Length: 140
Image: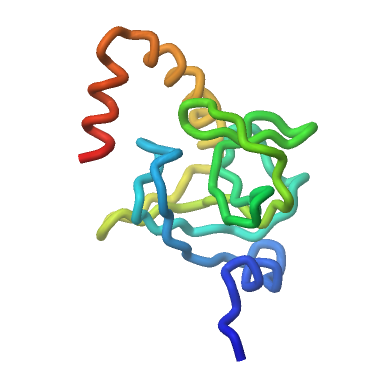
Protein backbone atom coordinates (compact mmCIF):
# COMPACT_ATOMS: atom_id res chain seq x y z
CA UNK A 1 0.00 0.00 0.00
CA UNK A 2 1.55 3.38 -0.99
CA UNK A 3 2.38 5.91 1.72
CA UNK A 4 -0.09 8.76 2.06
CA UNK A 5 1.13 12.09 0.74
CA UNK A 6 1.18 15.22 2.88
CA UNK A 7 -1.66 16.53 0.73
CA UNK A 8 -3.75 13.42 1.46
CA UNK A 9 -2.99 13.64 5.19
CA UNK A 10 -4.03 17.30 5.32
CA UNK A 11 -7.21 16.67 3.32
CA UNK A 12 -8.17 13.89 5.74
CA UNK A 13 -7.65 16.10 8.82
CA UNK A 14 -10.56 17.94 10.41
CA UNK A 15 -10.54 21.73 10.36
CA UNK A 16 -8.19 22.91 13.10
CA UNK A 17 -6.02 19.77 12.93
CA UNK A 18 -2.26 20.40 12.77
CA UNK A 19 0.68 18.74 11.05
CA UNK A 20 4.42 19.51 10.92
CA UNK A 21 6.00 19.72 7.44
CA UNK A 22 9.53 20.53 6.27
CA UNK A 23 9.96 23.66 4.14
CA UNK A 24 12.02 23.43 1.00
CA UNK A 25 13.15 26.37 -1.09
CA UNK A 26 13.99 30.05 -0.74
CA UNK A 27 10.88 31.82 -1.97
CA UNK A 28 9.87 33.11 1.49
CA UNK A 29 13.40 33.98 2.65
CA UNK A 30 14.04 35.50 5.22
CA UNK A 31 10.63 34.71 6.75
CA UNK A 32 11.08 30.97 6.20
CA UNK A 33 14.33 29.15 5.50
CA UNK A 34 14.97 25.98 3.55
CA UNK A 35 14.71 23.16 6.10
CA UNK A 36 12.47 24.97 8.60
CA UNK A 37 9.71 22.87 10.10
CA UNK A 38 6.27 24.41 9.55
CA UNK A 39 3.25 23.64 11.67
CA UNK A 40 0.26 23.83 9.37
CA UNK A 41 -3.30 24.17 10.62
CA UNK A 42 -5.97 22.67 8.38
CA UNK A 43 -8.50 25.25 7.24
CA UNK A 44 -10.47 26.28 4.20
CA UNK A 45 -9.94 29.30 1.96
CA UNK A 46 -12.56 31.59 3.59
CA UNK A 47 -10.62 31.38 6.87
CA UNK A 48 -7.48 32.96 5.37
CA UNK A 49 -6.53 36.60 5.93
CA UNK A 50 -4.29 38.84 3.90
CA UNK A 51 -0.73 38.35 5.17
CA UNK A 52 -1.23 34.75 6.33
CA UNK A 53 1.21 32.13 5.08
CA UNK A 54 -1.13 29.81 3.22
CA UNK A 55 -0.33 26.22 2.32
CA UNK A 56 -1.74 25.65 -1.13
CA UNK A 57 -1.62 23.04 -3.84
CA UNK A 58 -0.12 24.87 -6.82
CA UNK A 59 -1.36 24.62 -10.40
CA UNK A 60 1.45 22.05 -10.88
CA UNK A 61 0.20 19.94 -7.95
CA UNK A 62 3.00 20.88 -5.51
CA UNK A 63 2.59 22.04 -1.91
CA UNK A 64 3.57 25.70 -1.62
CA UNK A 65 3.64 27.94 1.47
CA UNK A 66 3.34 31.57 0.35
CA UNK A 67 1.95 34.87 1.62
CA UNK A 68 -1.68 35.73 0.97
CA UNK A 69 -1.70 38.98 -1.01
CA UNK A 70 -5.45 39.20 -1.61
CA UNK A 71 -8.54 37.13 -0.95
CA UNK A 72 -11.11 37.63 -3.70
CA UNK A 73 -9.72 36.10 -5.79
CA UNK A 74 -7.06 34.37 -3.71
CA UNK A 75 -3.60 35.56 -4.74
CA UNK A 76 -0.42 34.24 -3.10
CA UNK A 77 3.08 35.65 -3.51
CA UNK A 78 6.70 35.00 -2.59
CA UNK A 79 8.51 37.26 -0.13
CA UNK A 80 9.57 39.52 -3.00
CA UNK A 81 6.06 39.77 -4.43
CA UNK A 82 6.28 37.27 -7.29
CA UNK A 83 2.65 36.29 -7.91
CA UNK A 84 1.78 32.58 -8.03
CA UNK A 85 -0.53 31.10 -10.65
CA UNK A 86 -4.01 30.52 -9.17
CA UNK A 87 -3.99 27.85 -6.47
CA UNK A 88 -5.63 24.55 -7.20
CA UNK A 89 -6.60 24.09 -3.54
CA UNK A 90 -6.06 25.63 -0.09
CA UNK A 91 -5.06 23.11 2.57
CA UNK A 92 -4.15 25.29 5.54
CA UNK A 93 -1.98 28.02 6.96
CA UNK A 94 1.34 28.09 8.79
CA UNK A 95 0.83 28.73 12.51
CA UNK A 96 4.32 27.97 13.86
CA UNK A 97 7.90 27.58 12.66
CA UNK A 98 10.61 25.41 14.18
CA UNK A 99 14.20 26.27 13.23
CA UNK A 100 16.65 23.95 14.96
CA UNK A 101 15.72 23.93 18.65
CA UNK A 102 13.77 27.21 18.44
CA UNK A 103 9.99 27.06 18.01
CA UNK A 104 8.14 30.24 17.14
CA UNK A 105 4.36 30.32 17.19
CA UNK A 106 3.09 32.91 14.75
CA UNK A 107 1.03 35.38 16.79
CA UNK A 108 -2.65 35.69 16.02
CA UNK A 109 -2.07 39.00 14.26
CA UNK A 110 1.18 38.07 12.47
CA UNK A 111 -0.68 38.45 9.17
CA UNK A 112 -0.66 42.23 9.77
CA UNK A 113 3.16 42.27 9.91
CA UNK A 114 3.73 39.76 7.12
CA UNK A 115 1.48 41.46 4.56
CA UNK A 116 4.08 44.22 4.15
CA UNK A 117 7.01 41.88 3.39
CA UNK A 118 6.63 41.95 -0.44
CA UNK A 119 6.30 45.75 -0.49
CA UNK A 120 9.42 46.23 1.64
CA UNK A 121 11.31 43.77 -0.56
CA UNK A 122 10.24 45.65 -3.71
CA UNK A 123 11.61 48.92 -2.28
CA UNK A 124 14.84 47.33 -1.10
CA UNK A 125 15.43 45.69 -4.50
CA UNK A 126 15.84 49.19 -5.96
CA UNK A 127 18.80 50.03 -3.69
CA UNK A 128 22.01 49.69 -5.76
CA UNK A 129 24.10 46.69 -4.75
CA UNK A 130 21.65 45.51 -2.10
CA UNK A 131 20.14 42.81 -4.29
CA UNK A 132 23.57 41.21 -4.82
CA UNK A 133 24.30 41.36 -1.09
CA UNK A 134 20.95 39.79 -0.20
CA UNK A 135 21.58 36.93 -2.66
CA UNK A 136 25.01 36.29 -1.11
CA UNK A 137 23.56 36.16 2.42
CA UNK A 138 20.57 34.05 1.37
CA UNK A 139 22.60 31.55 -0.64
CA UNK A 140 25.44 30.96 1.85
